[in-house]
Image (cartoon, rainbow, N blue to C red):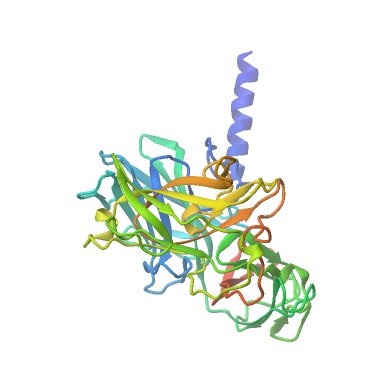
Length: 424
């Protein structure tokens, strides 16, 4: 019996080492696809930015003075001892086949040293921040990365993950975005036609060694992987008439403003204090698929933390219960989800709308920090991609934000380099 036990332990250890680390409740080796999200109910308002710019994707140049900034709150009075570790990922957001010493210069498993308590708020919390790189470490390889945050006393229990990217200047990207697609003409879709000009002399085979990854409005559920160009020359790769580069056009994001606890601003019908918190009741939404397109200047799903009564937005902005509603005379017959950067593109119970037959509408209550928000309602059938068609409509005029990443992996290489980035 003891011999079998030791055999089992040895086999488990060998498999663990081959996968690059010890197993946890959260990770299952290289099969895990990382996203930015919280795994802890008290951990809220998790946001990843480049240099603190709320409107920019979390992408910075390798070796520059730029910084990735990760902010979040924990709705608890006492300070938590939170540590973090960083992994290099491939173009599909899975762990790369390289060890940390190959991409990480500095101390590993560092503890967060920035934490401040909220001040004069009805909802108490502590605000945490991590800047990358910092005085404890720097990263030496381009590509995708993920940060795992965990409680110092429970290193196997991940409380949040945050994703970002570092790029090298190895390729220029041009792109034509058109409503004239291979599906329809100026109706419900947008088609991208990228051209990649490679400047990096390490790229020898444009047909096989570069991969494009394209997203719409930084939504991971829209991510498309394009493994090869339709044609190429000595240093240019062309992506023409590719069905995987056709996206639902969608609609402008809906907006609301909860920066003031005294007045109802844009998108808000009324604000009330119902002990112990403030409540913001948004105007009931209509299914815009049944309405003509109207231009509105949105922020492509982003949100900005702000309070008119605060000097320090990180610690003096309060939390509101925000009540969302979407009018519908009858159930749509498919799950309806709330979406925006503030949801971290989650499609689960935390964002699922519930149908209220007495009010003839879908409803959702979420606890959100004061600020300006973009949002929309998406329908997601089981085992299918989310869609704007039923709830928001698809209009070719919509001003969407697209990001294109160019990854390079030479034959025999063990990780994906990010050699070019475009976003509008």
